[in-house]
Length: 340
Image (cartoon, rainbow, N blue to C red; front, side):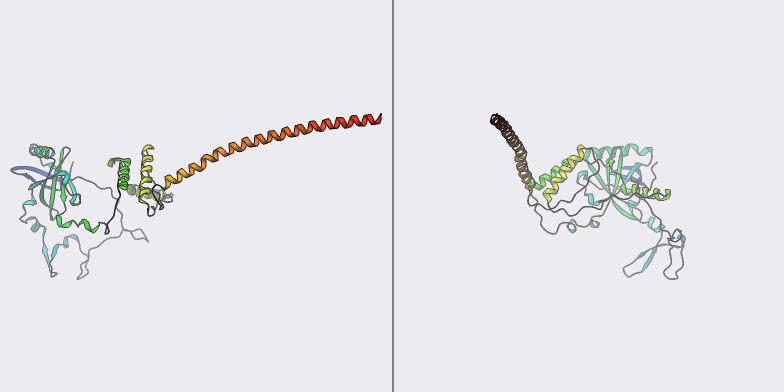
Protein backbone atom coordinates (compact mmCIF):
# COMPACT_ATOMS: atom_id res chain seq x y z
CA UNK A 1 0.00 0.00 0.00
CA UNK A 2 1.47 3.34 -1.08
CA UNK A 3 1.97 5.80 1.76
CA UNK A 4 0.54 9.19 0.80
CA UNK A 5 2.71 12.26 1.38
CA UNK A 6 0.45 14.79 -0.39
CA UNK A 7 -3.20 14.82 -1.42
CA UNK A 8 -4.97 17.20 -3.75
CA UNK A 9 -6.32 17.58 -7.26
CA UNK A 10 -4.74 17.19 -10.66
CA UNK A 11 -6.46 19.83 -12.79
CA UNK A 12 -6.60 19.16 -16.53
CA UNK A 13 -8.62 21.99 -18.05
CA UNK A 14 -12.08 21.62 -16.51
CA UNK A 15 -11.34 17.99 -15.61
CA UNK A 16 -10.39 17.53 -11.96
CA UNK A 17 -8.73 14.30 -10.83
CA UNK A 18 -8.48 13.72 -7.05
CA UNK A 19 -5.02 12.25 -6.53
CA UNK A 20 -2.54 11.31 -3.83
CA UNK A 21 1.22 11.47 -4.11
CA UNK A 22 3.61 8.77 -2.91
CA UNK A 23 7.31 8.07 -3.33
CA UNK A 24 8.17 6.07 -6.45
CA UNK A 25 11.62 5.02 -5.22
CA UNK A 26 13.33 3.56 -2.18
CA UNK A 27 16.95 3.60 -1.10
CA UNK A 28 19.20 0.77 0.08
CA UNK A 29 21.88 3.23 1.17
CA UNK A 30 23.56 2.03 4.34
CA UNK A 31 23.43 4.27 7.39
CA UNK A 32 26.30 4.58 9.87
CA UNK A 33 26.12 5.82 13.45
CA UNK A 34 28.67 7.95 15.24
CA UNK A 35 30.18 6.24 18.30
CA UNK A 36 32.68 6.97 21.04
CA UNK A 37 35.82 4.98 20.13
CA UNK A 38 36.67 4.27 23.77
CA UNK A 39 33.47 2.45 24.75
CA UNK A 40 31.31 2.36 21.57
CA UNK A 41 28.68 4.57 23.15
CA UNK A 42 26.40 6.31 20.65
CA UNK A 43 27.09 10.00 20.12
CA UNK A 44 24.10 12.28 20.66
CA UNK A 45 23.74 15.44 18.61
CA UNK A 46 22.25 18.07 20.90
CA UNK A 47 20.74 21.38 19.85
CA UNK A 48 22.05 24.21 21.99
CA UNK A 49 20.92 27.84 22.17
CA UNK A 50 23.73 30.15 21.07
CA UNK A 51 22.75 32.80 23.63
CA UNK A 52 22.48 30.90 26.92
CA UNK A 53 24.03 27.54 25.83
CA UNK A 54 20.93 25.72 27.07
CA UNK A 55 20.23 22.28 25.56
CA UNK A 56 16.82 22.46 23.84
CA UNK A 57 14.06 19.95 23.20
CA UNK A 58 12.20 19.84 19.88
CA UNK A 59 9.15 21.53 21.48
CA UNK A 60 11.31 24.55 22.31
CA UNK A 61 12.52 25.01 18.72
CA UNK A 62 10.67 27.14 16.14
CA UNK A 63 11.29 28.17 12.51
CA UNK A 64 12.53 31.62 11.51
CA UNK A 65 13.51 33.43 8.31
CA UNK A 66 16.68 35.51 8.36
CA UNK A 67 16.44 38.77 6.45
CA UNK A 68 19.24 40.52 4.58
CA UNK A 69 19.99 42.68 7.64
CA UNK A 70 20.19 39.53 9.84
CA UNK A 71 16.81 39.94 11.53
CA UNK A 72 15.11 36.67 12.50
CA UNK A 73 11.38 36.56 11.71
CA UNK A 74 9.59 33.63 13.38
CA UNK A 75 7.10 31.77 11.14
CA UNK A 76 4.79 29.02 12.40
CA UNK A 77 3.63 25.89 10.61
CA UNK A 78 0.07 27.21 10.66
CA UNK A 79 1.12 30.39 8.87
CA UNK A 80 2.83 28.39 6.15
CA UNK A 81 -0.25 26.22 5.65
CA UNK A 82 -2.41 29.31 5.36
CA UNK A 83 -0.37 30.85 2.54
CA UNK A 84 -2.60 31.87 -0.43
CA UNK A 85 -1.09 29.31 -2.81
CA UNK A 86 -3.43 27.44 -5.17
CA UNK A 87 -0.67 24.86 -5.65
CA UNK A 88 -0.95 23.81 -2.02
CA UNK A 89 -3.83 21.52 -2.94
CA UNK A 90 -3.94 21.60 -6.74
CA UNK A 91 -1.54 20.61 -9.54
CA UNK A 92 -2.84 22.75 -12.38
CA UNK A 93 -1.61 21.65 -15.82
CA UNK A 94 -0.51 24.76 -17.72
CA UNK A 95 1.13 23.20 -20.79
CA UNK A 96 2.76 20.14 -22.36
CA UNK A 97 6.17 19.01 -23.56
CA UNK A 98 7.32 16.18 -25.82
CA UNK A 99 8.62 13.47 -23.48
CA UNK A 100 11.76 12.91 -25.56
CA UNK A 101 12.62 16.63 -25.38
CA UNK A 102 12.72 16.92 -21.59
CA UNK A 103 16.08 18.17 -20.31
CA UNK A 104 17.56 15.45 -18.08
CA UNK A 105 19.43 18.05 -16.04
CA UNK A 106 16.13 19.46 -14.78
CA UNK A 107 14.72 16.11 -13.60
CA UNK A 108 14.55 15.71 -9.83
CA UNK A 109 12.57 13.29 -7.60
CA UNK A 110 9.97 10.87 -9.06
CA UNK A 111 6.63 10.16 -7.37
CA UNK A 112 3.62 7.98 -8.09
CA UNK A 113 0.35 9.80 -8.70
CA UNK A 114 -2.56 7.52 -7.76
CA UNK A 115 -6.33 8.05 -7.75
CA UNK A 116 -7.44 9.32 -4.36
CA UNK A 117 -10.49 7.04 -4.46
CA UNK A 118 -12.58 4.92 -6.83
CA UNK A 119 -14.55 7.93 -8.10
CA UNK A 120 -11.36 9.35 -9.64
CA UNK A 121 -10.50 6.23 -11.67
CA UNK A 122 -12.14 7.22 -14.97
CA UNK A 123 -10.70 10.74 -15.10
CA UNK A 124 -7.31 9.32 -14.04
CA UNK A 125 -7.29 6.70 -16.83
CA UNK A 126 -8.46 9.29 -19.36
CA UNK A 127 -5.49 11.53 -18.66
CA UNK A 128 -3.08 8.60 -18.61
CA UNK A 129 -4.28 7.34 -22.00
CA UNK A 130 -4.26 10.84 -23.53
CA UNK A 131 -0.66 11.40 -22.46
CA UNK A 132 0.44 8.00 -23.78
CA UNK A 133 -1.19 8.54 -27.18
CA UNK A 134 0.23 12.04 -27.59
CA UNK A 135 3.75 11.27 -26.36
CA UNK A 136 3.48 14.37 -24.20
CA UNK A 137 4.17 15.20 -20.56
CA UNK A 138 2.06 17.71 -18.63
CA UNK A 139 3.74 20.64 -16.86
CA UNK A 140 2.40 22.18 -13.66
CA UNK A 141 3.33 23.26 -10.12
CA UNK A 142 2.64 22.04 -6.61
CA UNK A 143 3.55 23.24 -3.13
CA UNK A 144 5.04 20.56 -0.89
CA UNK A 145 7.61 20.31 1.91
CA UNK A 146 7.60 24.06 2.54
CA UNK A 147 8.45 24.97 -1.05
CA UNK A 148 6.85 25.17 -4.46
CA UNK A 149 8.01 22.76 -7.15
CA UNK A 150 7.85 22.75 -10.91
CA UNK A 151 6.50 19.33 -11.89
CA UNK A 152 6.21 17.06 -14.91
CA UNK A 153 3.38 14.50 -15.16
CA UNK A 154 3.79 11.64 -17.63
CA UNK A 155 2.29 8.22 -18.24
CA UNK A 156 4.27 5.06 -17.56
CA UNK A 157 2.75 1.59 -17.74
CA UNK A 158 -0.59 1.84 -15.89
CA UNK A 159 0.20 4.86 -13.72
CA UNK A 160 0.91 8.56 -13.84
CA UNK A 161 4.38 9.62 -12.72
CA UNK A 162 4.99 13.05 -11.25
CA UNK A 163 8.61 14.14 -11.42
CA UNK A 164 9.65 17.34 -9.72
CA UNK A 165 11.87 19.60 -11.82
CA UNK A 166 14.64 21.96 -10.88
CA UNK A 167 13.85 25.57 -11.65
CA UNK A 168 15.65 26.88 -14.76
CA UNK A 169 17.89 29.20 -12.72
CA UNK A 170 18.94 26.28 -10.49
CA UNK A 171 20.63 24.44 -13.36
CA UNK A 172 24.20 25.60 -14.01
CA UNK A 173 25.35 26.25 -17.59
CA UNK A 174 27.06 23.30 -19.25
CA UNK A 175 29.93 25.56 -20.32
CA UNK A 176 31.35 25.19 -16.80
CA UNK A 177 32.26 21.56 -17.52
CA UNK A 178 33.07 21.72 -21.25
CA UNK A 179 36.71 21.30 -22.44
CA UNK A 180 38.48 24.66 -22.42
CA UNK A 181 40.46 24.02 -25.63
CA UNK A 182 39.33 22.95 -29.10
CA UNK A 183 39.64 19.22 -29.72
CA UNK A 184 39.76 17.60 -33.17
CA UNK A 185 38.30 14.11 -33.52
CA UNK A 186 39.01 12.13 -36.70
CA UNK A 187 36.46 10.07 -38.61
CA UNK A 188 38.48 6.93 -37.83
CA UNK A 189 38.25 7.61 -34.10
CA UNK A 190 34.51 8.22 -34.33
CA UNK A 191 34.04 5.02 -36.32
CA UNK A 192 35.94 3.01 -33.70
CA UNK A 193 33.91 4.65 -30.93
CA UNK A 194 30.69 3.63 -32.75
CA UNK A 195 32.05 0.10 -33.08
CA UNK A 196 32.82 0.01 -29.34
CA UNK A 197 29.26 1.16 -28.51
CA UNK A 198 27.83 -1.63 -30.66
CA UNK A 199 30.27 -4.18 -29.22
CA UNK A 200 29.34 -3.36 -25.61
CA UNK A 201 25.66 -3.75 -26.51
CA UNK A 202 22.51 -2.53 -24.81
CA UNK A 203 22.61 -2.15 -21.03
CA UNK A 204 20.06 -3.98 -18.90
CA UNK A 205 19.63 -1.86 -15.77
CA UNK A 206 17.99 -4.80 -14.01
CA UNK A 207 21.32 -6.65 -13.98
CA UNK A 208 23.20 -3.94 -12.08
CA UNK A 209 23.76 -4.25 -8.32
CA UNK A 210 25.08 -1.94 -5.61
CA UNK A 211 28.53 -3.48 -5.07
CA UNK A 212 29.44 -0.96 -2.38
CA UNK A 213 26.44 -1.87 -0.21
CA UNK A 214 27.18 -5.58 -0.71
CA UNK A 215 30.85 -5.08 0.23
CA UNK A 216 29.92 -3.18 3.40
CA UNK A 217 27.43 -5.91 4.38
CA UNK A 218 30.14 -8.54 3.85
CA UNK A 219 32.56 -6.50 5.97
CA UNK A 220 30.02 -6.20 8.80
CA UNK A 221 29.23 -9.93 8.67
CA UNK A 222 32.93 -10.81 8.79
CA UNK A 223 33.52 -8.58 11.83
CA UNK A 224 30.47 -10.01 13.64
CA UNK A 225 31.59 -13.60 12.94
CA UNK A 226 35.21 -12.83 13.85
CA UNK A 227 36.67 -13.90 10.52
CA UNK A 228 38.98 -12.12 8.08
CA UNK A 229 37.27 -9.38 6.13
CA UNK A 230 37.29 -9.70 2.32
CA UNK A 231 40.02 -7.64 0.69
CA UNK A 232 40.32 -6.02 -2.71
CA UNK A 233 42.34 -7.95 -5.33
CA UNK A 234 45.74 -6.61 -6.39
CA UNK A 235 45.64 -4.03 -9.13
CA UNK A 236 42.07 -2.93 -8.41
CA UNK A 237 43.00 0.69 -7.83
CA UNK A 238 42.38 1.90 -11.37
CA UNK A 239 44.55 2.31 -14.44
CA UNK A 240 46.96 4.96 -15.66
CA UNK A 241 46.57 7.62 -18.29
CA UNK A 242 45.78 6.36 -21.80
CA UNK A 243 47.83 8.30 -24.36
CA UNK A 244 47.14 6.57 -27.69
CA UNK A 245 43.39 7.01 -28.24
CA UNK A 246 43.18 4.82 -31.35
CA UNK A 247 45.09 1.97 -29.69
CA UNK A 248 42.85 2.27 -26.63
CA UNK A 249 39.71 2.12 -28.78
CA UNK A 250 40.95 -0.90 -30.73
CA UNK A 251 41.87 -2.74 -27.54
CA UNK A 252 38.51 -1.83 -25.98
CA UNK A 253 36.59 -3.17 -28.98
CA UNK A 254 38.56 -6.43 -28.90
CA UNK A 255 37.99 -6.77 -25.17
CA UNK A 256 34.26 -6.01 -25.43
CA UNK A 257 33.80 -8.58 -28.18
CA UNK A 258 35.74 -11.15 -26.16
CA UNK A 259 33.69 -10.46 -23.03
CA UNK A 260 30.40 -10.82 -24.91
CA UNK A 261 31.45 -14.09 -26.52
CA UNK A 262 32.54 -15.50 -23.14
CA UNK A 263 29.42 -14.15 -21.35
CA UNK A 264 31.73 -12.36 -18.95
CA UNK A 265 30.49 -9.58 -16.69
CA UNK A 266 33.77 -8.17 -15.40
CA UNK A 267 36.33 -6.38 -17.54
CA UNK A 268 39.90 -5.33 -16.75
CA UNK A 269 41.20 -2.14 -18.32
CA UNK A 270 44.92 -2.21 -19.07
CA UNK A 271 46.71 1.11 -19.64
CA UNK A 272 48.08 1.30 -23.19
CA UNK A 273 51.44 2.91 -23.87
CA UNK A 274 51.91 5.46 -26.63
CA UNK A 275 52.69 4.06 -30.06
CA UNK A 276 53.88 5.79 -33.23
CA UNK A 277 50.90 5.04 -35.47
CA UNK A 278 47.76 2.99 -35.44
CA UNK A 279 49.10 0.79 -38.25
CA UNK A 280 52.34 0.10 -36.37
CA UNK A 281 51.14 -3.08 -34.67
CA UNK A 282 50.02 -4.54 -38.03
CA UNK A 283 53.35 -3.64 -39.70
CA UNK A 284 55.30 -5.22 -36.89
CA UNK A 285 53.20 -8.33 -37.17
CA UNK A 286 53.92 -8.59 -40.91
CA UNK A 287 57.67 -8.17 -40.35
CA UNK A 288 57.63 -10.84 -37.67
CA UNK A 289 55.75 -13.18 -39.95
CA UNK A 290 58.29 -12.55 -42.71
CA UNK A 291 61.14 -13.48 -40.39
CA UNK A 292 59.41 -16.59 -39.13
CA UNK A 293 58.70 -18.04 -42.63
CA UNK A 294 62.31 -18.64 -43.72
CA UNK A 295 63.18 -19.75 -40.20
CA UNK A 296 60.87 -22.74 -40.60
CA UNK A 297 62.45 -23.79 -43.94
CA UNK A 298 66.08 -23.36 -42.83
CA UNK A 299 66.12 -26.33 -40.42
CA UNK A 300 64.74 -28.55 -43.22
CA UNK A 301 67.62 -27.62 -45.59
CA UNK A 302 70.20 -28.12 -42.88
CA UNK A 303 68.79 -31.55 -42.13
CA UNK A 304 68.93 -32.60 -45.75
CA UNK A 305 72.47 -31.32 -46.06
CA UNK A 306 73.51 -33.13 -42.91
CA UNK A 307 72.01 -36.38 -44.16
CA UNK A 308 73.84 -36.04 -47.49
CA UNK A 309 77.17 -35.30 -45.80
CA UNK A 310 76.73 -38.21 -43.42
CA UNK A 311 75.97 -40.59 -46.31
CA UNK A 312 79.06 -39.50 -48.25
CA UNK A 313 81.29 -39.81 -45.19
CA UNK A 314 80.00 -43.30 -44.44
CA UNK A 315 80.62 -44.38 -48.06
CA UNK A 316 84.21 -43.10 -47.96
CA UNK A 317 84.90 -44.94 -44.69
CA UNK A 318 83.48 -48.19 -46.14
CA UNK A 319 85.67 -47.89 -49.27
CA UNK A 320 88.76 -47.20 -47.12
CA UNK A 321 88.13 -50.29 -45.06
CA UNK A 322 87.84 -52.46 -48.18
CA UNK A 323 91.11 -51.07 -49.59
CA UNK A 324 92.85 -51.70 -46.26
CA UNK A 325 91.69 -55.31 -46.24
CA UNK A 326 92.95 -55.92 -49.80
CA UNK A 327 96.32 -54.37 -48.95
CA UNK A 328 96.59 -56.53 -45.84
CA UNK A 329 95.92 -59.70 -47.88
CA UNK A 330 98.54 -58.81 -50.51
CA UNK A 331 101.09 -58.06 -47.78
CA UNK A 332 100.38 -61.38 -46.06
CA UNK A 333 100.72 -63.28 -49.34
CA UNK A 334 104.08 -61.60 -50.10
CA UNK A 335 105.45 -62.54 -46.69
CA UNK A 336 104.37 -66.16 -47.19
CA UNK A 337 106.19 -66.40 -50.55
CA UNK A 338 109.40 -64.97 -49.10
CA UNK A 339 109.35 -67.50 -46.28
CA UNK A 340 109.07 -70.40 -48.68
